[in-house]
Each structure stands twice: as C-alpha cells, then as structure tokens.
Image (cartoon, rainbow, N blue to C red; front, side):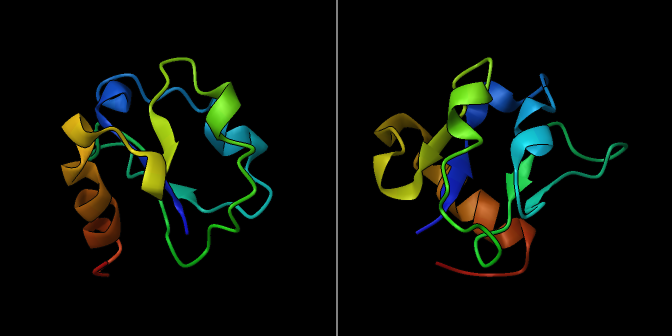
Length: 83
C-alpha cells in the first residue's frame, strides 16, 4: 500500500512531507504542478508524511476519503503507473 496526496494540497504545496520522507518518494515539478505526488512504488508505507501535512491532504490509500477517490488514480498516473 502507498500513501495518496489529495485535493487539500492543491495550491498549497507545503514541503513538510518532503522534508520528513526517509526515502524521498514525494515529487513535484515546481513550474508545472500545483501539488505533490507520492511515488507508489517507492513509498515504504512509513506514514512519516501524514502527521506533518498542515492541510490534512495525505492518506493511506485505503483510507482516502470517498470525495477524493480520483486522487488515487492521479497519483499513480503522475508516474506512468496504474492501480
């Protein structure tokens, strides 16, 4: 399982999650993206990113709120992967 970043991150892009990730699996392209993405194959499911997110945008994949279900696919597709 991986962690998913959802809608609350859009436009915020606070890097607290990046700073605490022990495997550097959280990415963004500064000029192009309006949020961060977690690489599902690199994420080690440590949960270090979840509690530091100031906008509560990071969820375990299975715990992602229904209203942000589409962000699961967005996170996978960002890396050219499918669920």
